[in-house]
Amino acid sequence: MELPKVAVIGCGNWGKNLVRNFAHLQTLTVVCDSDSGQLDRIAAEFKGVRVTTSFESVLEDKNVSAIVVATPSDTHFELAKKSLIAGKHVYVEKPLARDVKHCEELDELANERNLVLMVGHLLLYHPAVNCLKELIAAGELGDLLFVRSDRMNFNMLRSHWSVLWDLAPHDLSMMSYLLDCDAPEVTRVGGWDTQNDGLVDVAYLDVSFPVGANGRVIPGQVRNSWIDPQKLVRLTVNGTKKTAVLNDTQIDDKLALHSLSMSAAGRMTTVIEHPYYPNIEPLHLECEHFLQCIVSGERPRSDANNAYHVVKVLSDVEKRLSARPRLQAPTTR
Image (cartoon, rainbow, N blue to C red; front, top):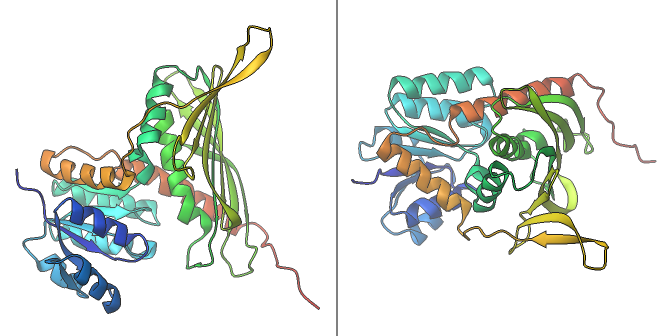
């Protein structure tokens, strides 16, 4: 079956990675961006790919069957809506939208038109994450006790959104996926605007994950920061048998299982295992999944329902943080 022709809207810091992957999958036909300099670089690197500054021309292009939106988050809803109305399958970088009603509207449009709508929750396609999901399902960790995700870096490219809208979608979507939880609930939130510019740049969320039919709840925490000079991307899942640590800043052996064992001398020792997972770029797998869903008609792993719950949590958290007294930066004399 012929593969769909893809147009990528936005070729900035992350969009250029989507351009690269769809080009390698031999489905990229058009790239659209407002920056003509970026487009010149794309045209020079990817021969035969059309470039344009006109989004409307992409919508009107009958050869384009799928549109990938990799623009600032406040434009996601409008661009995705126009694409769906034009009859195009749509992939939107996270978050799908900034309002839960917009998520619902996009899902309804896609369903009415029998189109694929997928959100870029990248970690749902990470081989190490999926390896961990299989280990959890097999009972390798025992009963789960606690889960925590730390995502921190130093980011001076601050725009119009907070650190939570930037980083927490990764954490919330990944943790919900691993625990098979559709509706996480935030029990406590903290956030600080350390630069005094109205943007929260350090935050934490205490989250409850209802799992199963017996009312069991697994507690967890998300910690995000834009002011940490040491990059940290780490997930910790504590179980009664083993604790899993997924450190995504490492090149090799990202996933480790820690447990205690009695040595021959009668002493407790720590055992560390490194489960096998294929070394494939997660974004390649995600882009491939989008194309497969278009061809097969199946609903994406990271669908609008998955996106809805992430946006619902973050919208609620944003309201809570806006109601808190603002942290003032110290004055200098």
